[in-house]
Amino acid sequence: MRRFKQIFGFALSTISLIIALSFLILIITYIIIKGYSVLSWEFISQPPKMSMTKGGILPAIVGTALLSIGAILFSLPFGVLSSIYLNEYARGERIKRIIRVGVNSLAGVPSVVFGLFGLAIFVKYFNFGVSVLSGSLTLGILILPIIIRATEEALKMVPNSFREASLAMGATRWQTTIKVVLPSALPNILTGVILSIGRAAGETAPILFTAAAFYLIGLPNSIFDKVMALPYHIYALMTEGTFPKEQTTIAYGTAFVLLVLVLGMNIIAIMIRIRSRRKQQW
Amino acid sequence: MRELGIKIFLLFFALSSLLFLSGIFFTLLSQSIPFFADISPVKFLTGTKWYPTHEPTPEFGILPLFLASLQVTLLAMIVAVPLSLGSAIFISELAPKALKDIIKPTIELFAGIPSVIYGFIGIVLIAPAIKSIFNLSTGLCALNASFILGFMALPTITSLAEDAISSVPRDIREASYALGSNHWETVIRAVFPYAKSGIYSAIILGFARAIGETMTVLMVAGGAAQMTHSYLKPVRPMTATIAAEMGEAASGSIHYHALFSIALVLFIITLGFNLISEYIRGRAEV
Image 1 (cartoon, rainbow over the protein chains, first blue to last red):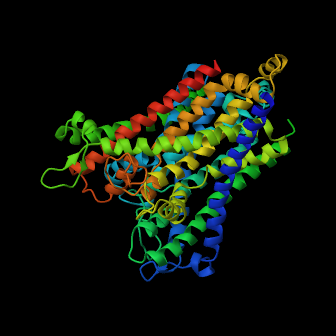
Image 2 (image 1 turned 135 degrees about the vertical axis):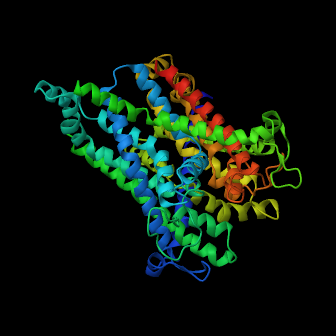
């Protein structure tokens, strides 16, 4: 009886994992197979044509690149300096705990709430309008927790003997941080940066009212222009417009490009992490 | 002296997350005030009708939206929790090290799939299936949203629960074996109780993520703002309402401010669950 229970229990857990993995793998293969047949050079190098039923998605690719890069430019200094404080400077456990709870709570805010915040503050209050700038700032706040966590992990992995050696030679804490700790932590910080870019590239709700446009022929000229974006493009193709059938085909192609982009970023990040762990002799 | 200056400078940046968090809260609050000046918060929270554009008297009751969020999220958790805990047990207890090193990053990779892609799958793959199985006119309904949300919450819960199970000290297991338990009994009676704070906090976090998820429910839940017990009918959760209606609501109108009030409710709910999850985990660490 006890043996039977054990076999039954472990069989159930194995089945759980198989169900979970097969559904998730199904999603990816389905998008890749259906999307790949839509893909062509024209698809990624041309703007949309004939009311979005023909042509490509170049403006959406460019828009997503601009938004993600903008987000990381805004977020990186905040994120890295936050983690330096948390890991290198903060002494009291209490203040660290409060800041960490803040970071985790920010990570838990629903993405559509970020969208409304961006609309009220960046679009309206600062009067940046619906633009690359507003969207990037909104996404920047959204990815801040990811950057902070990744940088903190990276700093933690630098052994204390490095810091002690530097301090013993008379360097100040700041010099130690800049010249010894940060360079050793760099590959792992890079992991966080790549993960954040992937996250920013895939978000839709925060840019709905702050940056995204349904249909643009040209590319944006300044950071105050609206942009198309890959995730928003998929949403718009599936819910708006007048040619659902042709639009769905383009949506498959767009989903393929977005998925490859986001998963690619994640896989690169994982590989950097594995390589840097292997190289570490300490 | 210079070091002190640097420390204060860094502290300013370190407080940025808290600053943004409170900035979000106060923005939502200030944008909600014009709405609450017109409609009392009690009427808003207990109203059973959501007809924001109805003339001459629009109705702003959050209840159907709130219940839809709850309905969709609860079933999502019924899908996600058993599968996640089962997967976590497999990864930490059964998988050899090499396999574990492949499965864990793979599961975490799935957490990175954008929600719009899940929504897209809900439309093109799950909706036709539900439509034909239950013989409905549309497969975009609460059931579809729950199913997809469940699988979206799965990587988060699995990964955090597995962390909790793996961090159970060896002596707990050994004590259990020494008392004559087999592997399964050890997992259920010794490892799980020890890791329960971590597991609870993983589940709560998964719930908070699911209730705040926007694009998926916007695309697959169907969008009717009605109170229903049926999972086969279209519903409109809070997140979907905000995303769907903000584009149409005239800036500064009462409808516009009403959507900020929904966001405020959503913010408070998710923040609450996050803090509970933090508290449980924090207590476990002490």
